[in-house]
Length: 174
Image 1 (cartoon, rainbow, N blue to C red):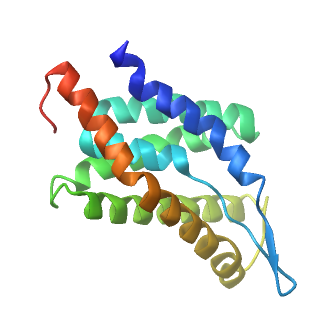
Image 2: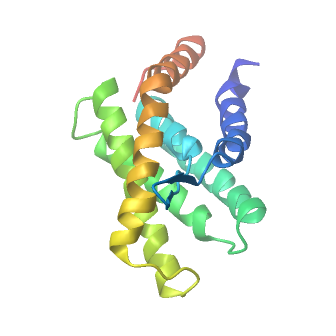
């Protein structure tokens, strides 16, 4: 049963993202601010850092494909970006110390990279055409603030749950 623990958390986070996304946009002084929850990818980054990069890439591929199927109409976008971000997280952790502060900072940097990649992609195909400064102030910054609050509240729980999984399997952290 313990081997299904990490994917079970991923499934719960997959379904929680649209629930928290329903609170967005927020209007302040006649400006709409969009906060996009990225719980799934942040969790997969933690899995890549504290557990196993290969499994995180596989989970990224599976949940990226599910994200493409259920939430957007472009198949392949998230199913490519999610595994790449997991690969980047797993590769970057080889060069920095593996602690909670570094994992949190790396997660936030990679979430910002995800948002920027999505902005560039949608700008290229002209699905969404907004200026970069507007994107920065109304989407990227609020998204980063919301996701950093989420990580501050639950980052230690992610790390401890993944480490507990390692203790039950008898494996050493990577």
